[in-house]
Length: 74
Image 1 (cartoon, rainbow, N blue to C red):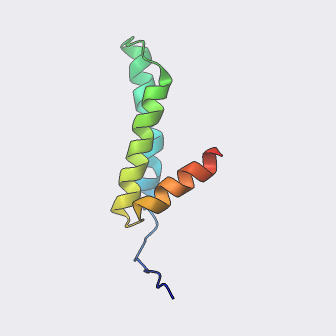
Image 2: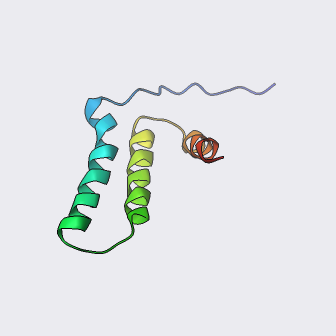
């Protein structure tokens, strides 16, 4: 029989919840204002990394984060 570990995951606070949105909007605005000319996919990838960091900080196992990401894509 396998035991499942119960971690003390917590929900993000308001700042942690809005941080990925602010990151994406800030990067997109900077791309437009400074005329960097980058694809928006780069900024979506950076925002996904920010989301993963927040999840790990809230003690969500990285395997669960990746599984949720793959489930949302497929």
